[in-house]
Amino acid sequence: MGWEMKLSLKNVILATISLFILYYLLKFLLFIIESVFEGIVAIFTSGFIYLIVVGFLVFKYRRKIKSLLGSLKLEPLLIRKDNKDVKCANKQDHGGTIPFNKLQDSKQTFSHREEAAATAKKDPVEEKTALKEERSNLKNEKVRKVEATLQKVGESIKQENDFITFVKGTTPEEVKKLVNKTYTEFSTKYKNEVGFGESGSIEFVGSLLLMNYDNSTKRDIEKGIESVFKNMWSPLDFSDYMDDVVKKSKVPYSMWSEGYRYLQNHHIWIEKHDCAKEANRVNKDVENLAENLLTLDYTSDGMLDFIDASEKNNYICLNFINEKDYFLGKSALEPLFIQMVRNFRLEYKNGSFIDNQYWYHYFEVLSDIMMNLSVCEVNLGNIDSCINHASLSVKISANLNTTKLEKAGELILYALTHNGDALSVHPQETLKQQIPPNLINKAELLYETIIIG
Image (cartoon, rainbow, N blue to C red; front, side, top):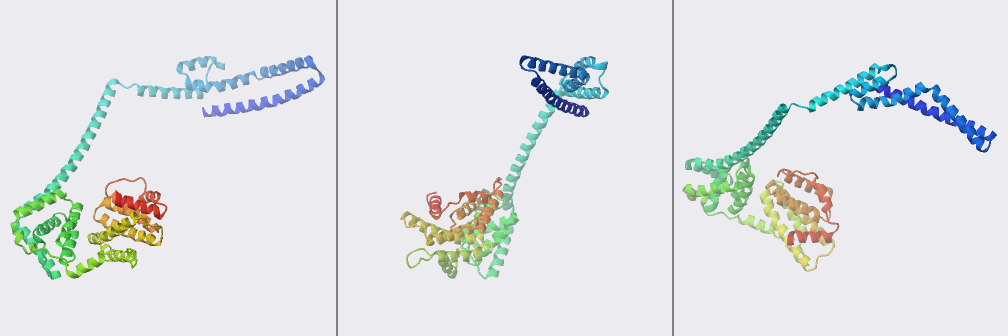
């Protein structure tokens, strides 16, 4: 069939060229005749001669013209007509037969059609059976999904209950042995027999059981206990810290609270242990350091000293955050952040805020503090706080550079993806579009976001 199509195309081209040449030959001949004859005679003579020439050419090449027209019409007939129509065409063809290659093509075409028709006309019984199988497969798939979901829920419930079972299954003697061992190790190492107080001691015992049940919490809990024995934290700080540790553990907070109540009601011996004596206060040197570190100075003209804030931010970053003590880093940064925001609020409300170098540097230091806060928050598992601090840090930065933008984007991406969220656009690209154009707009955004919001 492909060979016939090429032949037909060749015939069409040759016919077109021939007619084109014939047209101009006739036109030249008619020009000569019209120059000899004039008026009606010229028109009649030229038209008569034109008819004679065309008629002669048609008669002479009648077979080729017929073959050409037949080749142009044959293939569509083979494609579009059924078997009966082809037999009719067979009678009309010269010689009474269709060439063998054309007949083979037509047979192949009709055999494909018959196969398609046979496929389309399925046995009703088979079709009904296939439909039932398909419905059964869909039903089984739904059942498997439900079973998988129930299994996950069951594992979660089992895990929650396992912690309570673990606490209840540990005898008072075993718990006392664990507490004595840990308390002796830390008090000997730091030469300090600390007291967690009545409530804090139960939380201390509970933390030891938690790190034995969930080994992933061991490092964080030991760091918290160490901070208390080093007089860097009070028992209240340890209690706040444990809230963050529990949130990142395998045990839901409700189960942690239930375990606390069980220890309180069934392990009376804890209140007489050394760990339950009056809660330690942070030593005087650390208190003085904390007071100096967490309180910002003011300049001689009454303006908050952003240079002092920058130096303290760097100190906290170097000694706490870089040492992976994110809880202490957050605890130290938050007072600086609050003081700077409160000072900004007063100045903004009083109309004292203007676009100058002081506020330019002020916003840059505040932006750095917020970026360090976001690092602490993401490591403590506080996803929303991390995202809020990182995005606002970029938006209010007076001297935004590529490094800070990339860091904020990566923090937000890490926070969202570890929270199970999918993203189609990198947070860095979204942040670029949300950055206010100037310091006045940045101040307005900060006021609305933190003060009003």
